[in-house]
Length: 279
Ligand code: 13P
Image 1 (cartoon, helix red, strand yellow):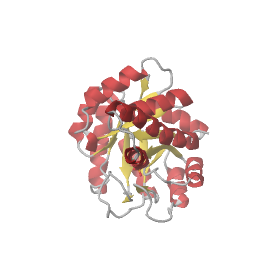
Image 2 (cartoon, helix red, strand yellow; image 1 turned 180 degrees about the vertical axis):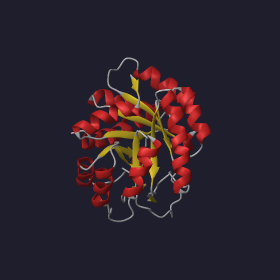
Image 3 (cartoon, helix red, strand yellow; image 1 turned 120 degrees about the vertical axis):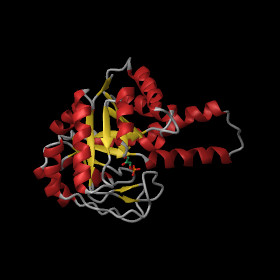
Image 4 (cartoon, protein in one colour; image 1 turned 90 degrees about the vertical axis):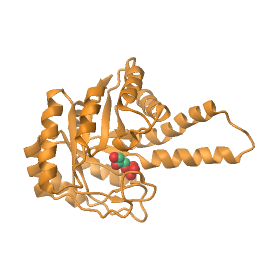
């Protein structure tokens, strides 16, 4: 069953766990996330980023997710991840996505505020949830999310309060020291900044840059208001490494076998994070 983001995050906030948001790019990754949710009986967010629109179009993503979730009773959210262009948000909503992330973090605070509010009004009229971002994450290794040299800007807790009440967003992505991609050194996550934001903001908070974040930090973040955690890079890095290992052996694989193996590798990472987030 496909539901919106608000419904799954409400339960997560009440019970202090986080719902995993896993990036997908093709049939294998979608299947990997849905099978993990079904087998673990844990809700999941299928996150399809604007940057992967060349891999699949929104209607196809929706058709696959819709078909695969018809028979299962665990809630699945179909979410548009990191979308900078409003026209793509409206395309995703028309295709049946139940949640969208408008990423205006590259804009001035005032422009981000204004655009986010407009998108919330339209999305809410159709029952679609909206996530927005304040602050900006740095780029780590292997990231596909943005410029590698991008500097980190921590979320300002006072702005966060104003932003949420003005725009009416359902969830707020915060920048507290995680990176998009694998960490180049020791992660330096500021739980103090998170606590400051959580004390001022009522909506569920979102942690981007989940890949490689230590389990103790994840637990600490969840205890202090994080209800959704995004994982992308590690799914890709792990799967590509495992396929490389297969290729160095004697055996020659049929593409259909590689496809099935890919589903299995994706599930290993998704289930690993699901068990950290959902306790
Ligand atoms: P990672 O690639 O670091 O896991 O971050 C994913 C993410 O934040 C997707 O929006």
